[in-house]
Length: 111
Length: 115
Image (cartoon, rainbow over all chains, first blue to last red; front, top):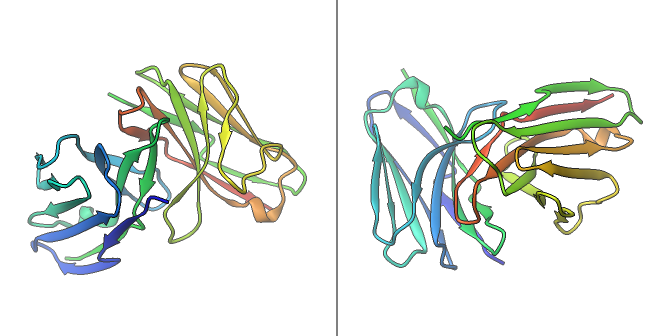
């Protein structure tokens, strides 16, 4: 079945540093999504990517949809303590619009 | 926009109790709603997909008689955990989608604890 490989699994960085995480897949997706989940809450949509090669920003976040539609990266610039959380990539596929999730990247930011 | 409200946020109840969780899309019509279960330190696991007015589609291994889903309107879906037991304790999250190629927007989840 479809799977997303997300890396790294976890990151420990200093406040102010830039962060990069990525997702790859053996399958093609029409839409890639990046979510952030805080403890005890549901995921919040950060960025949605619809076109191959698309580069989209949301504040300090930048994400790109790979040209092959099989990969995506998310960059966070100048990290701050509130960036702490788990970041999930997700590919939108299937006739019912099911999401295929990566296993998440846990980000820890040291003040 | 795209706000999804999930209620209750936390439930603690005795074994054998049935628990209903509501998921509402507040500012858009959701053609499809999804129910997930999440174990600690793991990703979301899809339980079922529901479309308004039709029976839910359950993922393999999810008991449809145990987890009853009703999607009565374009803004409301409910998940009822029937005769809940301690092994049903988990974090349940719903999501709503305005169209098949639209992003899913998630509720804040329900922490279910069965004693």
